[in-house]
Length: 314
Length: 314
Image (cartoon, rainbow over all chains, first blue to last red; front, side, top):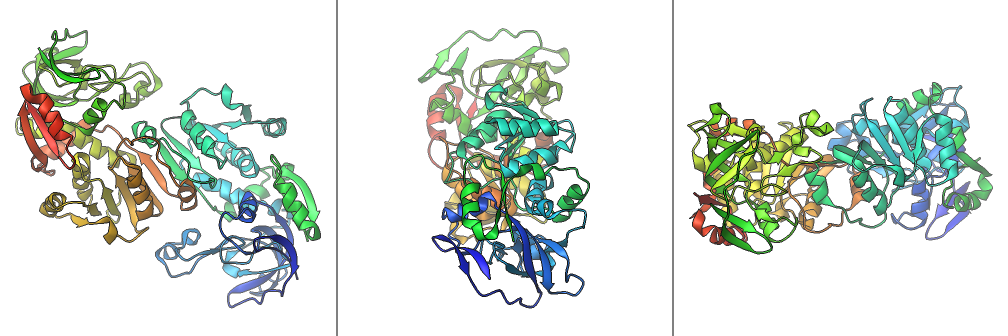
């Protein structure tokens, strides 16, 4: 089968198809999305080698009989089932986990993927492939609400309106809170305007006036901006990984009693419900689509500054 | 009156006694305690000049009639009464606050202090001056529980067993949680042993096994140790200010969904209740006492590494 492999170099390769193990289903890929994490893996940040990709929709070819022929999306963390986190039902933080296309598990940028059947979620017919491919990042955006109580009275500022930030503003808007996206170019303003979300530049914003600031920038300057914008006893949500080790004004965090909350993978079923209800616009985020044979070009396109979602068609 | 003044240099000076303004009481000092913040002010960290000191017990000489002659302790933050924080009852985070002996308000290392009467709390007769002087730092330790829900099932590690850390382990112990203090010398082990609290060295501890880590070290290495010890979805409480801008592995905070919670001044009434009930041992923390005339020597003593509480007698 074809696979997009990273082993120090990114290349389209022909590899043997996976043999599903006990408990796994064999998935035939239909569509996949490129995430910033994929770009970071190719930049060498997490020492990953293998098949990339973790945002996808696929059809079950082999596996439990009730799943055969169904369209599915898949959670990316595979827990050991034994550790204290797995026993508490938090396999996303399993002490021995692997993660599809990220850590010790083949990814979804390939014709076939073998994945634990318990990771799969059925995609209703009313959700298109283009939409379903956003379930994984939309779930990650919804994880903000798993970690932080959002009040409808809150003012919430979102920094870093890329692929994930554009989903974060939309799910936060559903709480009724006053959501403000910090824009850096016209395309971002247009999308926010379409959704009725306030767009501001950073310079427009008064300091220490937001109850919640969500940092999707992945940059030290983003965190420092978040600290400037959040009010005393407010919350900063970290929705990205960061390059290097940012310097942080921990004294200000202590003295102003700020909370910082890390946030990672989220609830697929909630994401599917919002997409089925049409409450989140994901298709406007699709910037380009490539046939899988042109996957290296798609990765290059996705890596250009300001690019939103690039899809791969199988 | 006599006052311990810092104006770039630390010196005992003779200054005019304060004239209480509307709403203020005039307090005659009985005893005061030296806090790390006092040492940091003298090190020039917060650009403060004036009379130092914010941990004290005093007698009311002028003010509201029901307070005259009473022994009192005093909250250190003076709110403006107008801003959104004051209106929510959070004067400790008032946008225009001053703070006794720390920020734009004279301190308690003087024969007299004029302080807003609404900041005062009556000290019951059963609480000695030596004990009452710990109300302010004990309240700060209790603020941990205002910011973080502590479960009796939690394993809690406290780093930095100085003046504040020794109060933090004691209030955390009252929750029934498994509290572990990280010790660096014999005096710390002896105190923890007296209170029935587990003492460990950092090297004894397994990584990622604590639900809560309280960092009272005020050092970048302390925060980094806390991040090493806390498990996924666990909480790090920042109970100190930090020198400079520590480098922080924000990627790990995001990926492991850690919470970081800043914590500052706390509830005086709760501290008074615990002291009255004899549930916290503060007198064991008194390392030395000096007459106020020797306040500069007392400050020097308090600044020696590993010194616990140094008191000033008026």
